[in-house]
Length: 498
Image (cartoon, rainbow, N blue to C red; front, side):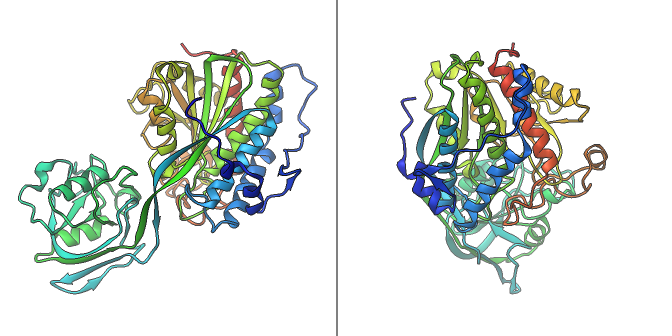
């Protein structure tokens, strides 16, 4: 596409050498041919036989080695991400795809640690980073000591907080004060920008507390988004701390957000098959970047690695002319900064190019250690939000894969938290798989899939411990086959959406 530019820095053999990966003849060594069953004439069976757990784990190990060699992270804007992109691009070229690298600018963020939250008056007290509070992702750096004004709070179980969502919430707000804002209803970006517009010099967000779920009582793991333009620092606090602060007359706080935030360049990696009807493009993607805090081997090394394995095996059918439709695979940059790479990609497409997309399939975290087997709820039957027409057929085909094998699955909402969002917003049918993040596994789910009820699907979500040890091999093996099954059936024309 015209918007693609090749980036030698991202796809060079030098980038792979820097990552500690072996090269031969100036480029990374191609994947060895696996001993999959070539005796069958059933092309779907052959693809499923060739997609293996060992193949997926080969890529996972490569991403771990890249992180090890690059400060334990593969976040967009870092050398670890660049080496990851180089690895993917090289493997896809070796598999026979036309590979393009699409560069774009985004706002990178790093939490340097050492942020501070202290009560100066009426009684001095210091709070503990990581226990009581943390820096808000995409906050501006800054240090402020000022009086505190609570903004339209609604406390207690079952609350429906809209704190800070409307400019009217800040009527009479004293310019120069710190805004104390509760989670709920609208984005943190909107809340912070409304606060800044009212003259706030900093924001302390606290969790909603509408339920006893830890995700609604602990330090909220949320972001202001790459588009945040408020210009003031922000911290996140637990619900209990927020309630205590709200009940303190004459409160003065000291806020320090020890973070960096700057514009930098990263890239998407796009791999296109060299045949098939390019007016009916079957597209599948996974975000390649990790968060700054860790190597991201489940989030989202799992989706990226499984997609690589599927793409390499599907290429054998594509190169033999067995695919009716054009196939496009994408590895997105800067997802963790607010879905930036996938949004940029879709925004650069013409109306005709969007119309050519038969579907978009998304794979974000498909190997969570305490996994659930979730399918995006294309028909809205589970969560009410219906995807664009045809999304129900995608969901049904994934459901068939699991049901035929006697494996239980559940729907998961199109919550806007992953790279399908820009496609859905432009009317492209979408679907995909997810094995859970910080959400808590229920007793019923533990009975269904095993694992530990009452614990997160991924206890290392967005943490340094998201390493090669933080994977369910069972989930990876099941989902890699499910991905291959759906991609191949649509690409070969054996399945279609209505």
